[in-house]
Amino acid sequence: MFKWLKKKTAPRIEEFDMVAPVKGRVVSLEEVPDPAFSTKAMGEGIAIHPAEGKVIAPFAGKVAHVMEKSKHALIIEHESGVQILIHVGINTVSLKGQGFNPRVQTGDSIKAGQLLMEFDLDAIQRDGLPIITPVIVPDGQDMISHVEILEGSSTSPDVPVLRVHLKA
Image (cartoon, one colour):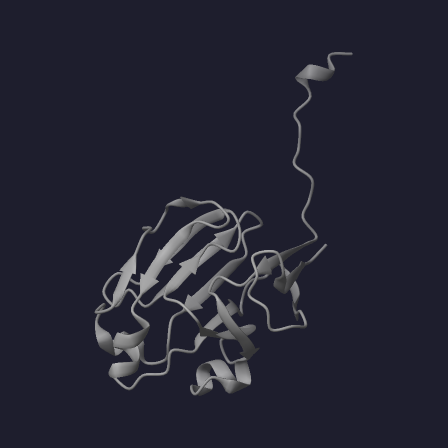
């Protein structure tokens, strides 16, 4: 009778696609010179050889965590609750924040395409550190069925690089 009184529920998400958060060349995690990433000990994903020093939100959601002291990595959360780690460079924690400029803080809401961080590619390389940037779906997230790596090496904002499948 009073249909307007019924609570509306959002449709359940079964999967979502994610574009690359960094412009550059997409490669497999096996190419990352750090076994925590290359052996997928932390989770499934891709790596990107950055062409520019910007991290852009690959979807709308929120910032779950910014590494405050080192500023080299952040975790963002999709509306489904799935979290993604974006780790700029390898061993860049040793730079203690030098060359990194986060544009968001933990807890911020984000829009797809929003600038999340800027980083200095030259400064990272001058310190002899790899700039390859792992983008992973960390293990231990119960709502995830599996992560699919999509073919191609494009980092176009229109071309997805990962598909996250959620449990029913």
